Picture 1 (cartoon, rainbow, N blue to C red):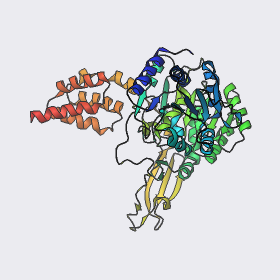
Picture 2 (tube, helix red, strand yellow):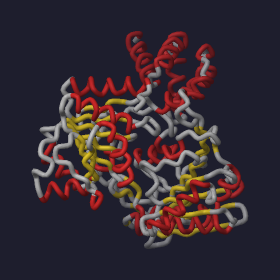
Picture 3 (spheres, one colour):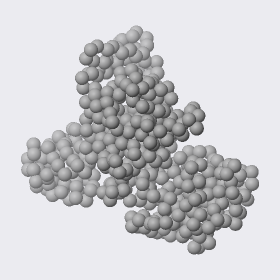
Picture 4 (cartoon, rainbow, N blue to C red):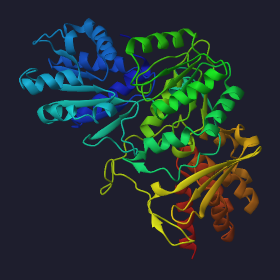
Length: 510
């Protein structure tokens, strides 16, 4: 199997991390990095040392693909339901998590000695109870390598229990090398989700589905599609089956060839629709939670996001469905009607997946909204009790939230129809960086203009530039600030580091 240059370098980093004594290692491999190549070479390296490797994959299709790939190295033992072909003495054991744990539970000696365990899409496996059986048996005795494009929990921290994350070549570099498709992003104002309860770290699905299924939101989503992506092969991300059906009906109404995938559909019928989507007979695929991790259809040209999420892994994995290259695709279009870009940042940012969870931060802790209070009657009540009504005119849609006791209006959100389909283009940090000319940082207004761009690149709120410019101007430090930000931006560091240097300078002046 051919190993690209960047894959060789990343593989050597992984081996170095293990040789340094890290027995539980995560490896970050973004879309199109080539995880099967890494698995092949890890197994080959292990076999050279007569070490036995267990490879876990989350889906039947992946188990079969890996089995075929690894056949070049020797007999491959497959542990997957009725398709099991078990060779007790084989150094290569490929399995589905459910099958291997069921057999280990029945017979703890089923696998005998295992030296290495590789888990593909580890962010999925870690959430399953079956994973605990493997941990109990092999966590201390084997070297573990977890592979994923998002080796993090919902809050962005390194998966619990692992020692280190080895960062594979990131999205930006693979895009520059031509292995990934560049993206263009548009996003309207983030939908008002302040009344949606947070359960288990993400939006309450039932409440979210109800909100996103509003007629105005669904019809608006179609308007946006019609304006920006009418002829593009598109995948739509929805909240629930009911939400997806409503969205599909909207596309059907406009004679757009549309299909739908969700957990309740017959598998054979679903496969037929996926084949039709692949061939182009179906233009729009409406998706509820299935085609996120590991689904590869390079011809997808557009993502329409109608599923808001607080989960960074879900967001990154969803975007990954668009990034694979295709001869007929020069750019991938993201239409974000869910506020995910504003929640999590530009979709192709190079991210740090090696951040350890701070002490006191509990995994999966629900973030409950505080009780609401009516200023008119003084009643205190749960947010779920708030009543809601929608007033629609020719030009506006106004959502009003009422006190359940006295029916006073607690707040209202108004959207102008004329502006609803006009999307704001979201520019990548690299593009913003090109616009920054620090030589213009000579006075308050010139400096503030450049700080606005710097703050935008870093995702800071608008007031940051004004406050920072005021501090610099008060102490006449524009020459110093210009040098600091030239260096900070050149090294790719966060602007707050430059601000800290300026503040330290001021302290010494005083």
